[in-house]
Length: 524
Image (cartoon, rainbow, N blue to C red; front, side, top):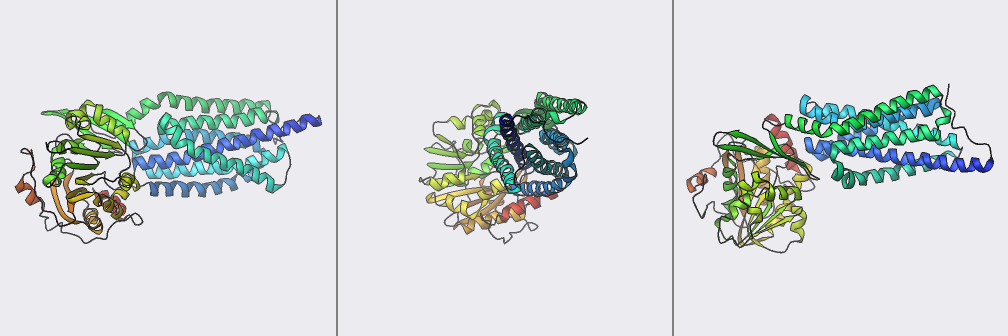
């Protein structure tokens, strides 16, 4: 038995009123469904960026697969038009269930099965298939309410669809992520999606369905809503359990911010706790050997004038700790993107124990800003600039390893100033390391490459830079735990199996460093 549209009233005035209300309700549902569909797409892109990195690749996979699947879904909906109401109801409930659970399912696939990309393609395809089937069925339902010219009907449907997509796109970063996070945000949107579909079917077109179909659809709808609500109830426990499976040591603090996933782990071992900081799953330091990294990073840059020091990145406060050991430092400015990382470095007892309260020292000025944009407007010059950025394995950080960025930083060096850049591993990622060197030199600076052993990282490299070739030396105010003059001189020697490579620089328009960083580390 076909569903032939809503049973309309017979009085002409009532008919006109019914048409207006029904069309408005249907277009409102189109608006909501479009917003939900775009949120599902953005959620998949955002999750992949956090878990895998490389936003451009994640966005390309999700959008390409979903758009292709939407075309297939539109074609697949053609035979369903004679049962448009029933088909739309089932498709919308399936979309709400899969879309709501998509982030949870993909997070589990990443953590437990190591099948993230394969699972992403499957989920994106099925979501696209269901989204693509919506518009043809909604077009049929719109025409059943009141016949109109095809062009006008298409204009009405797509206007509501595109405006809904705009609202969904704005709500995702500014409302859903801050209030609910990725996992719970997707579940909330799934509930909204299910309720919108149910409203259209059970309110506007309820008279078109037999009592048996109403009971069946009602039962399915209740089941879908129940699953999504249970997902919301247990989402925190699921997230904690799944996140812990990704780390060897117990998680003692975790924050999902607008910029990154921050995790602190701690393991009790002889000699004190091993505290580790991870950003988007990448190790930033281990308390057992972080002093090796930070002494090698900071002290060569401090060998010249250092009354005014600028640190770009380093939101944990450990590089700042080393800077503040120099009593003649008058001011130290630290620019960190993530305000939540700043808060943790100021308040978390594990981090304040390591950074010795450097983030609250009266000589310190802490700025929450994007370093690239901040450099474009800053006017002050600095005697020493320390660039301590996360590795360039995703699009967001690749710009911080570009010619343009180093040129901006170099323009803020005072006469005789020195700059140091953490540059990755010359052993594990030699092309990336020497690409950073070429990029710094392309910004008009001369470099002195050096590398040290940091057990948690392996062989790790740095670049000392200045307008004229800088001398590699240190003048620390006290004896350091690791770095000495002899160690530093040895650090400038590279073994025969890792010689200097002549690489082209990385720029904003051609981020070579991103390709190198993503390809080299996969072998380890």
